[in-house]
Amino acid sequence: MQQGIHPEYRPVLFRDRSAGLLFLTRSTCTSDKTLEWEDGNTYPVVDVDVSSASHPFYTGRSRTIDTAGRVERFRQRYGSGR
Image 1 (spheres, one colour):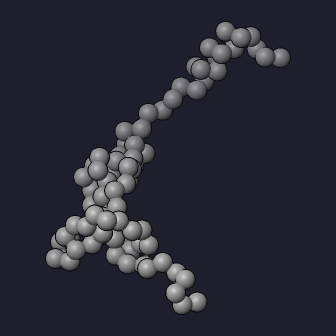
Image 2 (image 1 turned 135 degrees about the horizontal axis):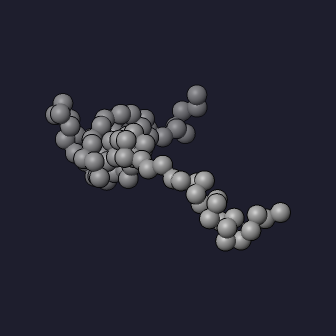
Image 3 (image 1 turned 90 degrees about the vertical axis):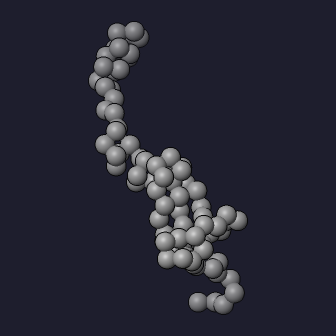
């Protein structure tokens, strides 16, 4: 591994703003914002839009789309297409 060309790999907090979830992991992401974690150390914070705490697939709030009904309405409106 060449020295001096790789970004710094360090502990970073990721915060899901919509769910209020905060988790500590290691990353090369950078941020100007910092936050004190449960262990008393201060880490950079990266805000994310979606995590497993707010994603509809993982929370069970996903909706099933009736694609068969849409296809039938399209065929009624525009013909069979053949």
